[in-house]
Length: 208
Figure 1 (tube, rainbow, N blue to C red):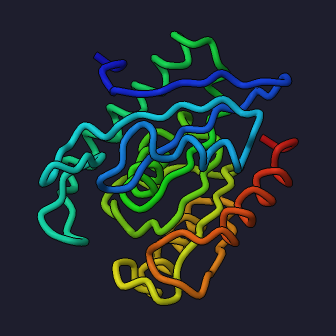
Figure 2 (spheres, helix red, strand yellow):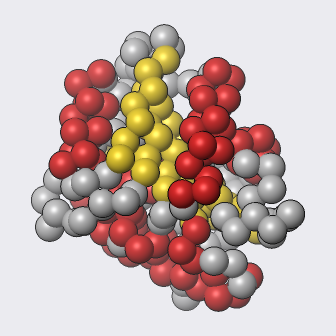
């Protein structure tokens, strides 16, 4: 059952031990972030699942009641499912489960963070574009040694500045090493922040 996510997988090359877990935003699918991931880490493996929730015909990773109003129980359940998928995929494709780097956008960034929050061992590092606060009622995990790159838009109408800052504070309160990257933009991703994410990941590569 854990492998029931529709997904794409590309193995790593040149001895790279990392696998990028690509988590699309609302309306995306397993193909949406493949180029994106390859541009950030060309030699890393790529594991790209499609969200199993459908909202008005658009795939997502968890349910919501309205824009920014989440179904918290569903987030928890879907996070457990994603962690199980990562483990099953590592066994099926023989990649190192300890070197999974989540790269998520919007809804995908939120499920990536909640999965790290609930299953710290499933994700080693994360690059999150436009994440927001999701779960606040869980037992505080020990995220010491975890590194996250959070990219937020100063003019994002979906994720206010205050929400992004609160999320980073939450991450840091659990011991995570967080780099907050602000861009002068909205909810869309710019080429400049992709380059910043690539540089950040390259600098941390030897420390994974």
